[in-house]
Length: 107
Image (cartoon, rainbow, N blue to C red; front, side, top):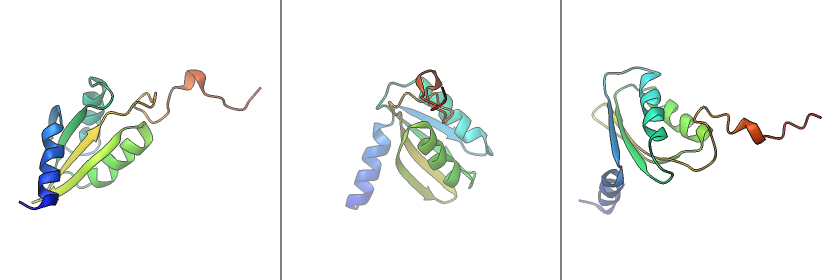
């Protein structure tokens, strides 16, 4: 086992919840990820397995727009594995953030 393999294995082992989205197509893998993250405290992690190639774009985009952290992304034999950490950004998981206190600049 290389140092990279050990780091990857350690990250995957830290994930509290695992989601098997193999065989599911967009948008279902990300919707399952979104639902799982809602049940976690900030800093906790989810491990997602998916076979839909679109997750290579969808998962990083979801994390970037919703305030979660993509800790690991790995592909092997047509299965993409992701470790996503729940963020603590006040986002509502839609990528729009908490609109109740947003300053729109309009008076």
